[in-house]
Image (cartoon, rainbow, N blue to C red; front, top):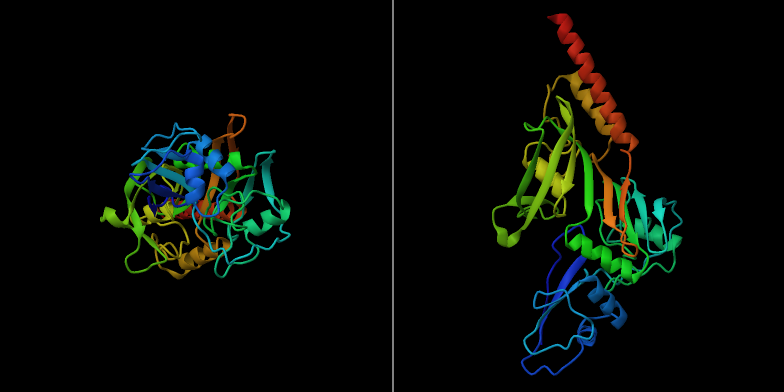
Length: 353
């Protein structure tokens, strides 16, 4: 038996793949036992739930059962959460949660901008996971991630606001993860970007990978061996000459995908310090305009991105679920200021003419 670890198709999800090739002398063995014996810290029941959800592939086929007998040479791929720093013990933090929906299987929560999703170096406390651990002590722990990412099957950036779904049962974990893997989850974002895209709507497709020089950034790359294919569908909702309000539907979920795509297209997100949106990209550099922009930066002290809509099939009932959240007040206030500025500017130009 040979094994290797891959990565999920979507970086904003927390799945990875373990791939095994059964030895030529492999004896008959149930699929669930085969995987339980080979994947660190995973129970047989969890393997069985993953198989039921379609997250185990045998020779490319996910229509297999737990009692399938592994044969010599079989290629078996098992999708499980990415490993996390097990040295971090998540402490419960009494932080109010803005829960939009909850039942026995899952909950949908609104994460404000500025809150980190899960603990890591420099962010051990007051993350969303810390709050979840406090709120629901026995929330299921994802395999391979003891006490670190309870129930989470996707994530959004610290400074992105919006909706997240949290699983409360093993069945829900794997069935939701499968939907993310198959790109059937509905995710619609809204963003304020610099300038005005030429087209009212369009699709951005390219390869995204780690920036070759700045390792904390992502970039559009031509070398597909070091990048992943990414697709963003966008639509302009409002044009304000200097900035625009757009919506983005994600077909893939790469790290920083919207931020990289819009920056590469010449329309970085407003006040995105990492991708060039924290300086004037359109308009004059005269002191009054510059002061106006700086005041808007103070209103939104981070990139202007909001995960507005989240839709999925309920893992237990099969019902189509769709949740919507309003723009945070910071983004709404900033847009109002730009609307007033543009209106005043047009009035002055009319009087001058």
